[in-house]
Amino acid sequence: MHTRRIPIDPANIDRAVIKEAAALIRAGELVAFPTETVYGLGADALNASAASKIYAAKGRPSDNPLIVHISRFEDLCAVASGEAARAGRLAEVFWPGPLTVIVPGSDKVPRETTGGLKTVAVRMPGHPVALALIEESGCLIAAPSANTSGRPSPTEAAHVAADMDGRIPLILDGGAVGIGIESTILDLTEEIPLILRPGYITKEMLEEALREEVRMDPGLCAAGDKKTTYSECCGGSLHVSAAPGAGTGLRPKAPGMRYRHYAPRAELIVLEGEPGRVAEEINRLVRSRQAEGKRVGVIAADETRSCYRADVVAGAGARAQEEVIARRLYGILREFDDLNVDVIYSESFDTPRMGLAIMNRLLKAAGHRVVHV
Ligand code: TXA
Ligand code: MG
Image 1: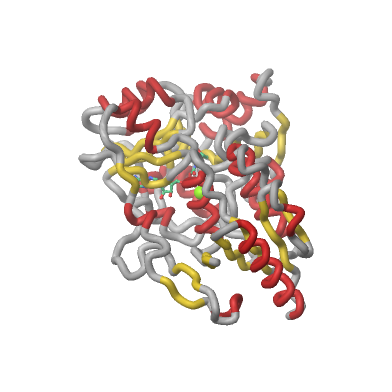
Image 2: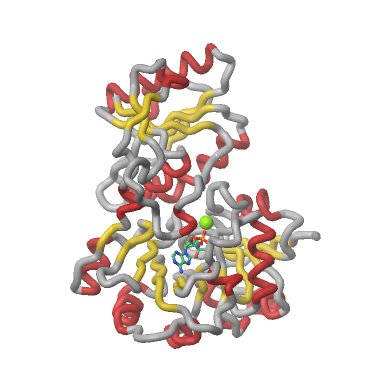
């Protein structure tokens, strides 16, 4: 299949392009489009055969459900069943925007979209191209991130093309996205609303809007409670965390958060600790891996970037500008792949607001290999 990539200016949307893309969605085809978080791979959410094409194009496990994207709040009722008071309060504050809610699903949503769950994930994206496409198609659009399953999510159209060329008919190229990591997912089917995936919208923001307690999925936070020695990279002297929930029986509630994900092809290891010691240890590790003939990359904050000697050193942004770090992260991981890097050592980015979301993605990309120095 030939994949066309059509530029579209979010500030001055070409209606003819949107009409063409919308016709493809109505015909049960796939269209990749920009959202404010990452690029999505869209299909008619209520058309089972269209939704199943998403799994084929991404190589995605069929039990991993999709997010239904809507352009009007009323459309929540088309896919949800039961009371939507809490969703309504959140929608007023955060939609259109980077928040996905999980609500009880209606029978109209095919299992190809819900992954066979009784609940459904819904979000109204805060991007003019995404909203125009949903509206013009007259459909609700199921859209996961437009990457091959297991690779970093695409934050620009070139990333989508790298993964989807030949697999889908159309990519709408609206330029680089604004946020760069996927939406916050909040499960409203729990008595106490539960964050299944941290994102730009934080627990504190949700609590303020709902005026009630919000919890973090303990399956996400369980990483690091069991330490195992990671002798391959550290000569047996340092410790690395095991996979999330190891030893606790806990696992993330969102099916997609259970897989190793967002991952570059290179081996990625995150180092935590006092910045001077982290730099010293990373430089030591780089030298020892280079001595084995490996190409080694480092991800560092702008402030400490010049401390490193490696084959490639990527500046993730200043620690004070966590939005920049979030926006750059996936692109950096893809760049390392393009540069054929074998091993990546990364500083950790526990920034005040988005640190949880940034570290969640970075640790998943690393398969939760963390060295504490
Ligand atoms: O920012 C985003 O949310 C992007 C853009 C394209 O909108 N989309 C996105 O979709 O990240 P995806 O498919 O890559 O991630 C959706 C996540 C998966 O982890 C999936 O398991 C979870 O949402 N999910 C979907 N429906 C669910 C449900 N009913 N219950 C629990 N988790 C669900
Ligand atoms: Mg994804």
